[in-house]
Each structure stands twice: as C-alpha cells, then as structure tokens.
Amino acid sequence: MDAFPRLRRLAGPVVAVGSMSLTAYVLHIVGIQLLGVEQLPGSPLHVLLGFIAAVMVCATVWSRYVSRGPLEWLMTKATGIARHVR
Image: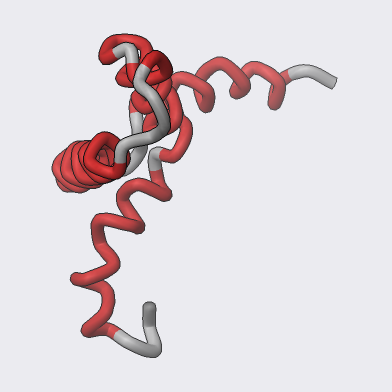
C-alpha cells in the first residue's frame, strides 16, 4: 500500500475484513444457519453478495474503532498463556 497510497482508501474494506478474518468466517456460518441458506436450491448470487456486503460494512465500521476483531482478540488472550509455558 506504500507504493500506491491512493488505493489504500479503496482497499480499506478488504483490509478490514482481512484483519478480522476469523470473525468474518464465523459470522458467515452463523448467518447461513440463521437464514437456512443451505436448504435453498443452488447458491443464489444475491445471498452471496449480501453476505459479502454485510461483512465488509461490519468489518470497516469495527476497524475504525478497534484494531482487531472480537474473535481474534479472544484467540490472542486464549493463546497468550502459551508464552509463559516452557
């Protein structure tokens, strides 16, 4: 991003999703279960685009206030104890 600073703003939502990828994956699974998408015939494009848009918007808003996703933070705390084990 240092080579192309103008692209930073355009790539912001993608970078935000990348910084909280575990949370994004879990939200997709929860959304699929809540909507019952697996029972639909085929995979409708509008459902896929809806999931992508929702995760990008949520990740972008979240990243403005917090640097890391909630599940990424939890994993950091859960595995942080390993630093003290020898």
